[in-house]
Length: 134
Image 1 (cartoon, helix red, strand yellow):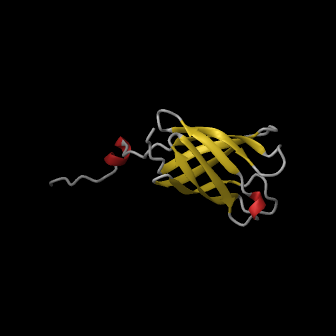
Image 2 (image 1 turned 60 degrees about the vertical axis):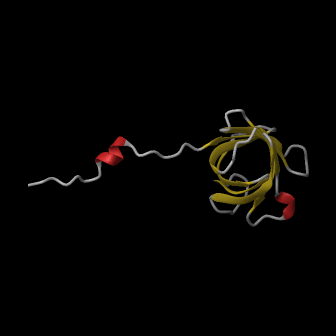
Image 3 (image 1 turned 135 degrees about the vertical axis):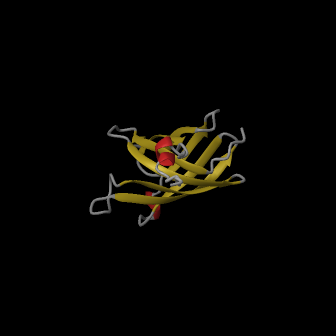
């Protein structure tokens, strides 16, 4: 499969131990088999932190398989989860698992879908003033 993952994605990840899934938004850039990007998500685990967490990801793509490490800004090296997933045939959905190197209960699943491109709406086009001859 030869889909380019470059673009905006929205998704969510969940914990194997349960709890509410965490939504996120990602901006991915794929060059060859290298993958990089930024992720923004609500802060659900850092006490006294900002309301949003940001992370940088680096990884690789091999056909329909991908893997990356998500490095949260401001956290130590041991706090970076590894993601492994598969791009589905449509090229618009990724599903997989994530895990921390430490305890087994810090694992889970994730799903990402391409964020739909904004298209000019009829309302937006109608809002553009049209010159009228007097």
